[in-house]
Image (cartoon, rainbow, N blue to C red; front, top):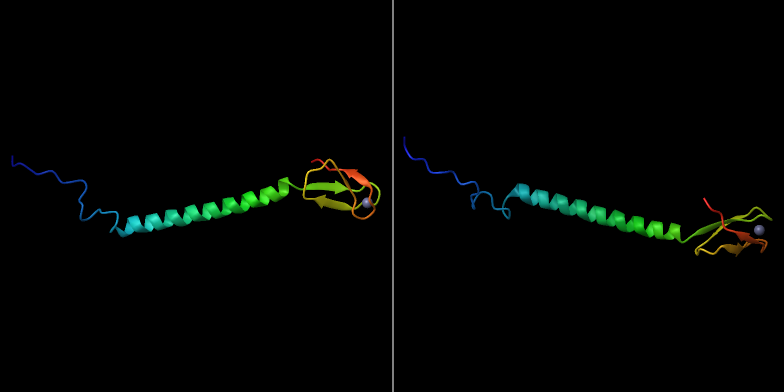
Length: 89
Ligand SMILES: [Zn+2]
């Protein structure tokens, strides 16, 4: 039985990640997905910041619906000046 030399699993010339087009494509695809995820996450966090720092009020006197960019428990109505409690959902 003749002696066979083992086939190398990793050849430096053929499977070099720097020159492999599939590895380059995969790296670019993952980079694009990562940047898109980062952008959407940043946008959502900004949107949720605005929503969590806003309180909604309903005037019991003139039925005006208004919001304020803070979280006070009561706020005066911009139309009639009547002080209303915030709405809780
Ligand atoms: Zn009012």
